[in-house]
Length: 171
Image (cartoon, rainbow, N blue to C red):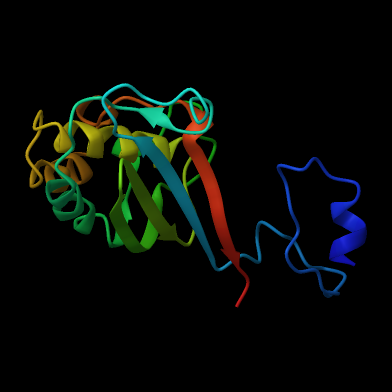
């Protein structure tokens, strides 16, 4: 079934597995976990080839500080500080199961796994983590931003072109 579906999709979208589900199954509401990745090109000059797939930050990032800050996100929290005004969700409470900041040569990848995400939440968290990585904010400020429930304290909303849905789990 995956092969048949892939033959009808753009090459940039691939189905890895397809299976039959109950008739009342809903892909959004029956999802238990999602993992998003935000990919940062942290090289001096950027790259022409990946310019539309990564977000370029030429200043060296302190990945350790970013990871320290990301650790504050793990757990059940009200993420009001990290949602856009267009969010239609009734509740801003979400669970982040895992928050990682990985360095792979000149790329920095922010990986967030949670039970759900608010509109622009990952992009705003990534913008905040970049500010921390640049030394503009201290890692412990992430806790204060989270607790304040005030969008104006968090970083900017980064562009969507570097955001990837990496995994969806229904188990």
